[in-house]
Image 1 (cartoon, helix red, strand yellow):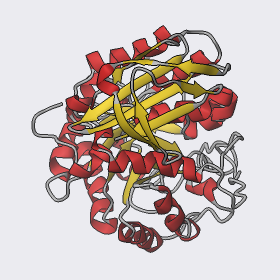
Image 2: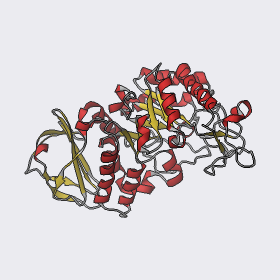
Image 3: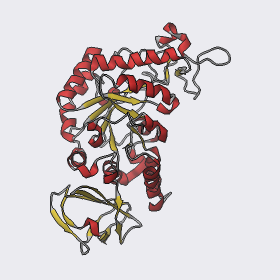
Length: 425
């Protein structure tokens, strides 16, 4: 990462919760979602990432409601969600609870009837016939042309609008790797002058960390899926983590997740893709050296695919079966500095066991503080699991039971199928 772009101090121990506003409530509005804030804050949620809240193009719209990512105006809200004033109040309410707000920014393309197609047609790419087009075959959007430097300033002004008007705390930048890194460097340099922002890129390109604080971990997501399907073994799963550790900058924040709007709607719910390993994999995402990313409804848990272009709201039951599970993990990450991201000292250290083929164990440390994680990544019960790591010995607290434990060479652990235990000191 470049020397002059440093993440906001609060981002090293934070978490991200993706809000699919259209589907979150029956109403699908800013005002309806605002009622959920106290519950989410109690769960430990810190950063709210809102999928695009801008109006959706009508021309060549897909489905009834269209894609959130086919914007028709960068400077207003989707009337289905509410007014700009409604969003301001929602952001202020989140801030009052100590939460941050970032918005999805779609800078690579717009919808076919975006205001710029009339105001600034030179901002768009043209095919050989002289028509707007999208290079990736997405039917409902058209590509912007970053060879035109006038576009840079106008796009910057649109981004600044949301900072000035709504006091947002950062951007999740859609398909960031399709846009020149030089534009993002320009945008961050200018926008960070007034307020230190959080920058999350939807990409996994290493060099984009020259500008962005955090990037995605699709490679590990797909490895977890393949592992559950028995297409790869533990060695291959760990190889992905070794790749991240060796190839990405130490200060790079990586967003770990088991699902998001794309994966859920297009590939299937996490339970379709990962079966009974979901909670074990969620523990990985919350305790590895990165920033956990949670999607709308995972605390329910959400077991269905949500339609992308239609109204298909989450059917909340009021029980929130995994609320305490996520609360425990998010609070641990916040309270124990050993889980701090972007810190060489806290890098996970593999702990050998007598069941290493299926049990993944690792320790993270920061000064006198430690977190020890044991996960049975198999469908079989594993009894009498022993650790072979003298540096892990000591007195711990089981974070899920609060029971005290003395861990040493003679300690045995019993892990049921896809079970996990986490200890801290």
